[in-house]
Amino acid sequence: MAKLQLLAIITLDGYLFDRAVSSPLWDTPDKYGLTRIRDRATQTLGPDVSFISLIQWKKEYEGIYLIEAVPDTISVIGSMFRYWLVDEIILFVIPYIQGDGIRLFTEIPGPSSWEMTGNKCFKSDICRLTYRRIE
Image 1 (cartoon, rainbow, N blue to C red):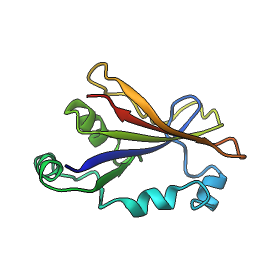
Image 2: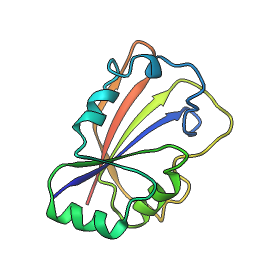
Image 3: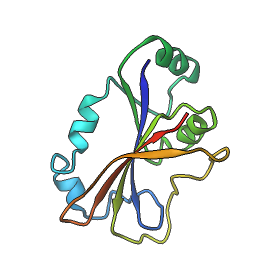
Image 4: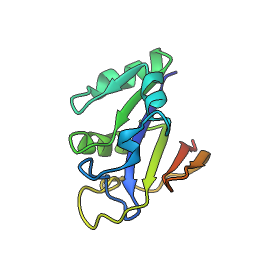
């Protein structure tokens, strides 16, 4: 069965990190594992993903389906959480308070439990946290 991963880069106050703000994450994505995460994905999903197809793919195929939290995908990510499709969350937390923008978790249908499966803090104070949904 395939796994659906959500990759998100957020600020300390919970907003999607503005790509216009300078960050070592943008300059050296290999150093933070971003390139590896993206390269390991069997399929990268966008805002126009078909949920019927996605449900079928998850049942019939192996591999990793990756969706990145960006302004264009935020509404489809909310729907993925409503239908319990997200299996793993990879969060990069940037030591920055943005004050406004798009929040990652705005349309969550209700409580769910997650367990941390990995964490790494870099010298730049950026942290990568990985969580797996508990069935």
